Image 1 (cartoon, rainbow, N blue to C red):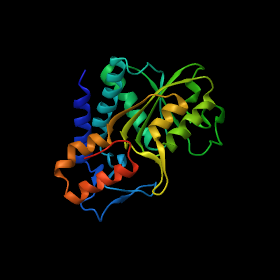
Image 2: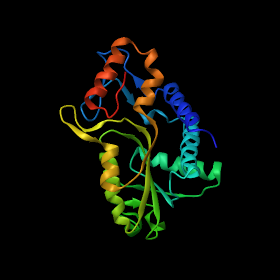
Image 3: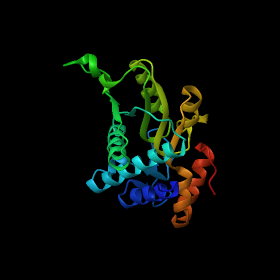
Image 4: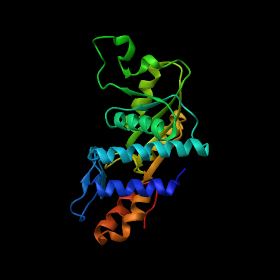
Length: 241
């Protein structure tokens, strides 16, 4: 089994090589997030759409999950659930990678943004793949980036429609390590802390904001580096320097 450090470095290299991690070239060209906050970096997993990128993501996701299972950090599970839309691809890649690389065969589930109103609506009206679910089974969530946590909370609520189940954890591609809220209103808890406290769900992230910053900070223009520091002073759950 490869090390956690190898997984992190491989993933960051992929994000940079494919333009999925965008860093502001100057302090006057920051990225406006959905929350309204002006960030010095932006991650768009939608940039990883070529075959080579998907193959590497399959390896990364499967290897990270297998690593967590091997270390005993993650409880075994029956399904991987990917929230629409970006989580769907991640769940499918993780399942394929686990089977191909580690002989671990799991099913995946995903939700619909709108309820199905045709065909066999009893089977997958809200959650596709629900017809394979048996009461009491265990589910691992997977998604791309956590900022406010809204998508994850919505997913956890939708999963209640399955009936009795256990969510063994949430695997994130990137944790932005930010407090909940928007540009003007900053709450005390991060999205991750909220999910852990309110839903009793363990959260694991392949990459986080501080790791990204520590690996790229020496190459940042002085004004952009200061933007990172100022941003996390106001919105972050970690301190940068």
